[in-house]
Amino acid sequence: MDQNRINITIAGKSYQLAGQESNEYLSKLAEYIEAKYQEFGKDMAFRSQPIDKQHLLLQINIADDYFKSKEQVSVYVRQNAEKDAEIRDLQQKLADLKVRYDNAQSDVKKLEKSNQTLKKRLLEYEKGAGKNPGSEKATDH
Image (cartoon, rainbow, N blue to C red; front, side):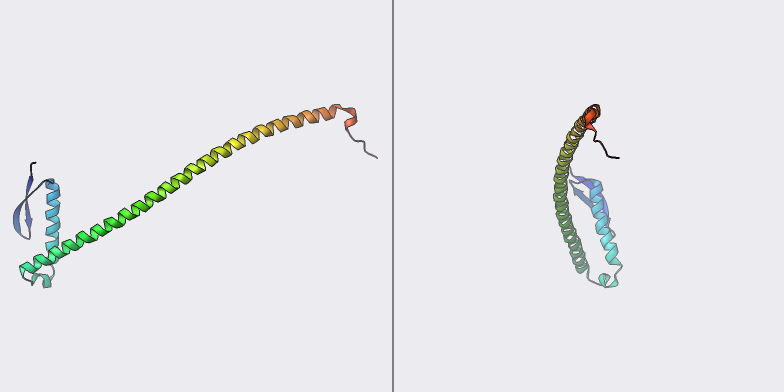
């Protein structure tokens, strides 16, 4: 495989960096390291340290960033898994509610049909009761 090569500058020194990753990615790495040098370089206590100790402090700080990022990813993965479980639970509840809704709609249709049948029977009964001469009750006046 071809390696990408890029010229970078870190802490005022030029280097040629090579890797399988894109030049943009390699450049980001260099920018990150350079930013760390700039950040630490503002601290007089850091600058007064021997260069090997400066490098060690930067390496420890970068490792700290890495492990904190890794822990944050773990938190996000855990939260994502919890959200996925919650989504599955809600999807199941939604499916159950759809079934209940469909059953209720079916029941409503049956009740409406039954209601129509009962209304027809009531009308037929009222018509039939009105045709019988002895069907009305006599009232005393």
